[in-house]
Every structure is written in C-alpha cells, then in structure tokens.
Amino acid sequence: MNFKLNEAIEVLERTPQTLEHFLVGLNKDWLLCNEGEGTWNIIEVMNHLIEGEKTNWIPRIEIILNEGESRPFPVFDRYSHLTDGNNRSIEDKMIEFKTCRAESLSKLKTLIKAEMDLELSGIHPAFGKVHIRELLSTWVVHDLTHLNQVTRIMAERYREDVGPWKEYLGILRRNKTGN
Amino acid sequence: MNFKLNEAIEVLERTPQTLEHFLVGLNKDWLLCNEGEGTWNIIEVMNHLIEGEKTNWIPRIEIILNEGESRPFPVFDRYSHLTDGNNRSIEDKMIEFKTCRAESLSKLKTLIKAEMDLELSGIHPAFGKVHIRELLSTWVVHDLTHLNQVTRIMAERYREDVGPWKEYLGILRRNKTGN
Image (cartoon, rainbow over all chains, first blue to last red):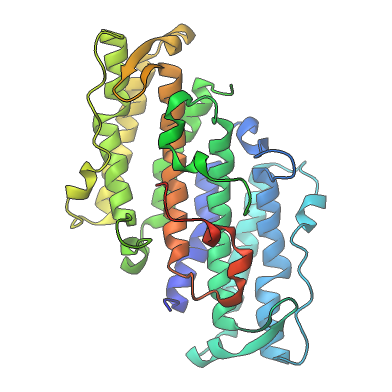
C-alpha cells in the first residue's frame, strides 16, 4: 500500500491546473473529437469531473463520517454529465472545476483530522464495505484515468495521420474502452 | 486525415507547460515510481522527451528538407535516455525540455514555409518512405503517448490502495506495455 494523504492531495490539487494549461486555447476540433460512437469528448470529460466534485467524493466522505455503515451511498450516476449541454466554453468549465476542486480540498482538510479517520468505513452500493483510504486513493486514480483519457482521445484524432509510425505509438494500440 | 500544422503546434507548445504544472513539486515517490521491472519512471520519461528534441524531430525534418530520400534517417536510440543519470531535479529537466521545445518550434516555423512542404518525404530506417506530415503527426501523438504514460505510471502506484474500485478504473485494467 502506498497511499499517503499529503501525496494524494498533491495530485488532486494539480489536476485542474494541468488540464487548464493543456486544454484552454485548443482548437474546437481537439475539444469536440472523440474515440468513436458512444465515447466522450473532452468537454464531456470536464462535465464528468465537475459532477464528481459535486456528488461523489466529498459527499461520500461525509456519509461515512456521519452515518458510517448504516446506509449505502446514494448511487452516483456516472453518465449524468452527458445530459449537461456542451454549450459553455472550456474556459467556463475550467473555472467551475477549479473552484469546485478547491472547495473539495478545503473541506477535505477540515473533515479528515487524523490518520485513524482514513480507516473509517461506509457501504458502497455495488461492492459493500469500503474505507475512506480507498475512496481517497480512488479519487486520485480517477483524476489520472481522465487525464489519461484526454490524451487518448486526442491521439485517436491522428490515428491515420501518423502513417507507418502507428506501430511505435503505444497509445494507438490500446482499445477504446475504459474511460 | 485530420492533421493541420497550426493545430499540431497548439499541442506541441502546450506539452512542456502541462508537464510542469502536473509534475513540479510532486513528492519523489511519485517521480521515481514505475510500472515494474523494465519500465520507466517519470524522470526517465522526461529524459526521453528531451532526447527527442535534440536528435529526432527537427533533425529528421532537416534531413528530409536537405537530402530528401537520398539516405535514411540515422537510427534514433529510443533508450539512450536511460543512460542519463537521474540526479538532476525535475525542475532542471523541465527547464531543459521547455527550452529545447521552444527552440524546436521556432525552428519548425522557419523550416516549413508552405503547405506543400508537408508532402516532402524521406526514408525511415525501419519502414521506408515517410512524409513530413506523418512525422509531425507522430511528434504530436508521441507527446500524447508520454503524457498518457505518466498518468498510467502514477495510477499504478495506487493499484492496491483503491481496493474494490479497481474494476471501475480503466487505467488499471490496461497492461503495462506501450510507453
């Protein structure tokens, strides 16, 4: 096990600025491309990250702290962001994500006061007992998953353009599942 | 085909700042972890990106422009960065990469003056005739591949820590090949 709270926060606090420096100012063709039917574009990934701040990470920690294992977490709709319109700019999405994430981390620091809080547990609706330590680790890996997805979506756009180099580029050998 | 020179440059010029905002200041445990024996850590990825600026992208464009198909490109050693020591800080590596990339892009703009230059061709030592358009597309996807790799390396560090959430996290379902 490698989780340490301060190191997890290092990643969580960097995700918005990383996405901002990578994505703001890119042509719409980069922001609206996807990996094929049923896959997400970058705007949809941003919506999903914002949604997670509002309904997933901190709310679940609060349920564990307040109610423990007495009731399962409400089910988190992983696709609710797809019903949000794509009509706001990437700049607006980025400001919203940065603001939400800053609030989440500020709240996290008030909620988790001691190492032993990390061992508190709640009930996940699909797989039962989970600990705050696992939820926080998942929050970090979830950020990394979506940073990873953004690079994969963009690479896909040049799949044919790279010509014979395709065989050297690992990112194009992967399948398209797993956002 | 989706390649456009100005859109390719948008990505190429963002890669150093994206990596800087993501990686500088992270704990050594993030920077030195890898995906297992024979895989790269983040410092090694940075070395590889710097090496590419010095010996791969612009040098190959110059060979195409100056010599066309008259001789193959020199073989690019994709593993030479592993012989560079890991003893310089991530801040130093980042400054070097930013400087090299800025020089590369400045040179690119003087070398490629017209759309038709993109169709000029040279000889790749492994797969023969390639066009500048393909080389430039590959440069972009190569950046994306290594951004992708960095997120995968970091996610791997928490593989066990996420507990039962592993099955929801696509980044952990991938195999470890393809840097």
